[in-house]
Length: 485
Image (cartoon, rainbow, N blue to C red):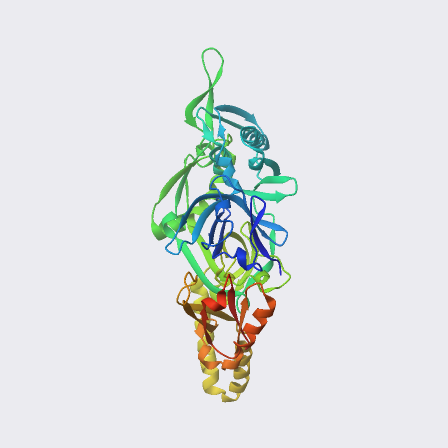
């Protein structure tokens, strides 16, 4: 299994096997459409607390050899127990540190991004610079015409002139030769892992935002060109529309959606579209998205790479195969965000951007199946034994999880303190701790001293809860419970 580690300015700050470098939280939030963030906490006695300098230090998180986060701390703070917490932002935020001066650009889409990065790289230090990577976003004419009379930060300029008009996603890759910025129309990676009901899916929440639904759409293109009295070409205030290619109408609508929720209008501008036919094509594709509203799934999963399996992690900016028949989920979806708790991976969640999920028809089909099963049970009692066998098979494939509960303090500051630790065991969401024998529970301590830890372990076998005192902890120690089912 790949080990998760944290470095601050190249110095090791956290290692799971070094008790003196213990931390209390390392939670990474990946967001395909925004800047990733990291919440990092460490106890008062961490030897390198003062090494983290907000806005100055470079914080790098590695899982095995792969860099999963690089960035800087924005702020720090401490709580009642003097536990220090830092909120960090990823390297993509470095694009906020430079300013793009007023400009006028005519050329390719790739050329504009190259221009933005060249201005940025000249204005910042080496660690904040990016190389231009893969660009899969395209323009139909491969020609854009943009200008800006105001100063703006580089990230805002990229969003305003590229992402807001042509779509796509920014992705930072960490290589041996520096940071690479990709501009992708769609994600170019597919997760080796899949998400499956009855395997690594713990929970599923499907949400639909109907407030964003639109039924009628007015598309507008680039400003029309006119010739003044001196023969110079100038822009007018009138924009290209679809009237000439849409039966005289400057809008399109969806008749079925209008009958359902009425007329709901919006408009959108494509500054780079000069042909009415291209504008109509873009508008139809956009209206199809707006009719449905926004649908997403939040899936709570067990990342199999955290269990020791030799398989890559699931990350935001990847496509993931998901299958959960009870929820109507079956397909390959874009992972838009992921929350990774590296100290408590059982709570990891991913958010999937999905569409076309229809639970109503699925539920109706399930009800039909249930009725059919009832009829069979009433008329064919001989099949009960076979059905029972199938139920046993389903039960044997259940997923189990443990939860460690601390009654008392997590950090001992004075002699004589103690806390009681409970280990609860769940089969899916059902607490089955009471049904398990005491002999199934074996407690372990990791303090960095293998000999004394082995002796401590031998004295804590066959009990469901333990009392931990300052004598058990001494300098630093972590505890966990192994359950055999």
